[in-house]
Image 1 (cartoon, rainbow, N blue to C red):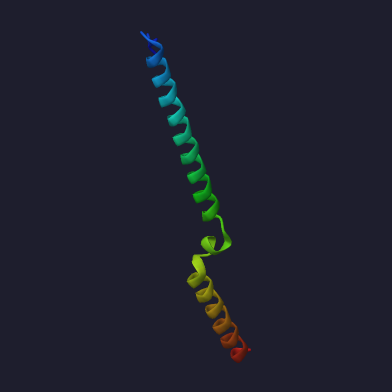
Image 2 (cartoon, rainbow, N blue to C red; image 1 turned 180 degrees about the vertical axis):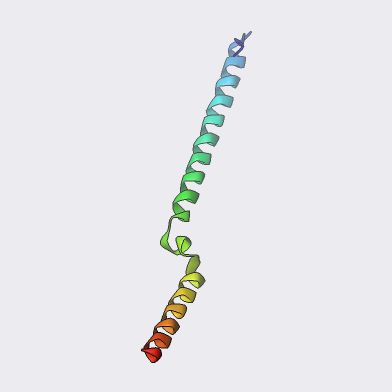
Length: 71
């Protein structure tokens, strides 16, 4: 990385402000990615959402009824 040369304290302050804002942006992006990842691991999302759960319950109910008739 090239060494940056500053000619005034204003330039240093401006650069520090930019770095601080970049750090805040990176923190928010990390929070966003973490929350999205956490949401992806909710049980309803893992099973295909609420409609997916309802479909699985209905299919298993119907399958049990059919198996009982043939038993």
